[in-house]
Image (cartoon, rainbow, N blue to C red):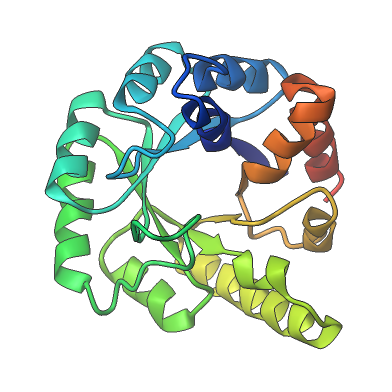
Length: 239
C-alpha cells in the first residue's frame, strides 16, 4: 500500500502572512502523524517565504515517522541538510518568483552539480530523492547518478483542463513510474494532488508514496488537520 507524506509548508505560509508565531507547522506535523501520516515534508526555500530553519531543526527533534527536506542543490542548503540530517532530502528546482515549484529538476542539464550533491548527502547517511517531470530520459539520468528515489511531478496531470490532456499526462506518469520501478528506484509522486485526483492512481502499485500538502492544509482550515489527513489516508488505502 502506498504511503502518505504530508507537506506542512502552507501552515507556515499562513503564519508568515502576519509574521506571527502561529499557526505552527511543527504542531501541524504532530497532528499529521497522529492521524496516520507516514512522513512530514517541508521545503526550506532560499528566500524563507514560509518554512524557517527553526522549523526544520525542531521537526528533526520531534518527527517520529520520517522527515523529508525539500531544497535546492545549493551550497547553503547542502550545509544546512548535512548539519540537520533529515531522513530524506528531495532535490527540487527553485525560482524566487514562482508561487510554488513549477516543474521537475532538469538533471540532464545540471548533471555534474546534482550528482555531486547526491554523493555528499548520501555519504552523510541521508537518502536522496529527485523531483523530476515524468520524462524517461530524466528518470534514467536519476538512476545513473545513483539517486535512491525519484518524486514524479504530477502537476501537469492535476492542472489539465480537458479529459484528453488529463489522460495524456496520466499515461506519462504511469510510464515513468514503471520504468523507475524497473530501474530499482523508489517511486514517489506529488504536486497538486487532492482528494479527487488521488483516486485516479488506483492500481498504480509502482508508486510507493504520495507527497501532498496544499489540498490537505486547505481542508484542514475547515475540518482540522487530523481530520484532513485521516481523510487522505483513507483514500490512499483504497488505491
